[in-house]
Length: 231
Ligand SMILES: Nc1ncnc2c1ncn2[C@@H]1O[C@H](COP(=O)(O)OP(=O)(O)OP(=O)(O)O)[C@@H](O)[C@H]1O
Image 1 (cartoon, rainbow, N blue to C red):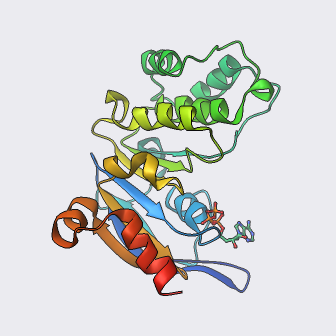
Image 2: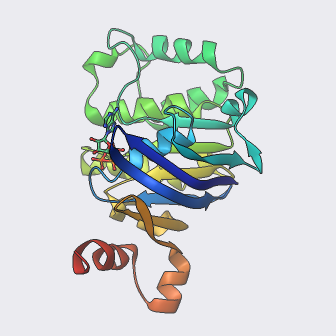
């Protein structure tokens, strides 16, 4: 389990989030939701120790993240973290050098799943294929927890469907997924837990099944209550 415990972060005098706490379980898909600029990317980066925090802590299975545990957690950004002159294969080779737990067979299966050509240059990829390459790179690391930032951002419906199908495929089985998305409809039926962020805090946290059965509401209904009806 990833436990985020009273995490606070400011850029200069601007508070991005304040005393945010929640958990993300292994084998579940947890979705971080919030309007533009609420701090979703910053929070994912803070959990992955890619940006410092002001206070609070993150633990994995009860232990603070140590160097070894970086292998247990992978951050998949929504932009290409590599030189655009690289081919997909060169990007793969680059990543392999960093991760001792790189899984070649999984990488090759993912390339087939997304029908990607390893020889293509990153600079020639469409936005949808950039997202798919990022997912191939992240999911080829044998990590227990995957942090995905906006995997559907700015992508056409067909690529979104392909990426959404990944969520119900064996590739993510048993992993703990923490994902941010504005395209909630693409994966609403697959999300186990939703965390709605507002004004730097957790405004609502729920299991989607509980919300459906107990209140007869969808995630979108909850979002409307938090972000629209209450200003
Ligand atoms: N390096 C930085 N320095 C200063 N401010 C930053 C930095 N990175 C992000 N911010 C600010 O922090 C706030 C949160 O940004 P963040 O990208 O985490 O939000 P987000 O919820 O992911 O937004 P979006 O939905 O648009 O992707 C924004 O106001 C942003 O301008």
